[in-house]
Length: 164
Length: 164
DNA sequence: GGACAATTGTTGTCGTCAACAACAATCTTT
DNA sequence: AAAGATTGTTGTTGACGACAACAATTGTCC
Image (tube, rainbow over the protein chains, first blue to last red):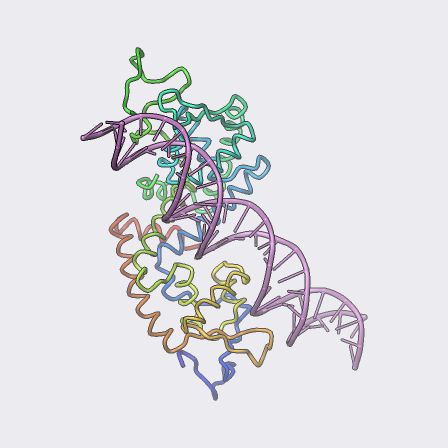
């Protein structure tokens, strides 16, 4: 069946169909090449791994970094606003903030205007920490440049600017 | 409340620091803009959601599609080879194949050459199903084109070709 | 030829993450 | 005042990546 040139063929392919190139890397992807989603996914995994490794000493993951950055740039936002801006669920943000608050990087201040919501702020410690994180994140960004090239990275940012 | 210009202050920022632009979308991202990882992540989420929605009727997710595609293009591969080629863990592939085998799309054939390994093949049903999946995937790919533009999509594929 | 290391598929655990659903407290609307 | 919407919270589910351990089998090395 399929593309198997079975039986009498000189190329080793057993009748049960076990191909003998298991270890080699010449495995075709067929339709997968040309799928943007596949390439983007693989690249996203690589980029996150590099981010996690580069910020490994300070133990900050990409999502945590994005939360800290938004709060730092917009002090006083509510959890709902941060979640909506970053495209994460408010249920998920609760745990993220629990962690960041335990580490004394962020504080929740009960709003007097809307007693349902919390105003989010960096602590003093959080502000200085974020400055360090940003330096490491810039280092990570240079790794990306090295990987795909300076112009390619800029083109990528232009192409995907609408998703930020 | 939200847009309420609170009490006497002209500029809305209470003493507790609750900013009054919770619902609006003019929230700065500061350092996040310029981070390739953030843009790529957001784009990847969008693209996967569109894929899942477009292939929703046939209940096929991106990872499942990639496995079927590779097996279809390279019949007889071992699980190890497929896992390595797609960059997924062989432990994870076990569950994926369990599901696909239950749905009669894939079959594991015990290899006689290496009795540890399984030769992976599409079933006849799996082959015809994959043809349908590919048509739907092509439709999804057109959605991507519509979203970011034809040339941008092609540039993206060129830039990220090294990760496939 | 036989001990030892490596590989393959499998099972299991852990942590991240998206998607929902439900809930109490609190606004908003009418 | 009553009904509806919003905010933060808790919980569940499932996909996914990363590890670790294991039995069966193969490869290697002496």
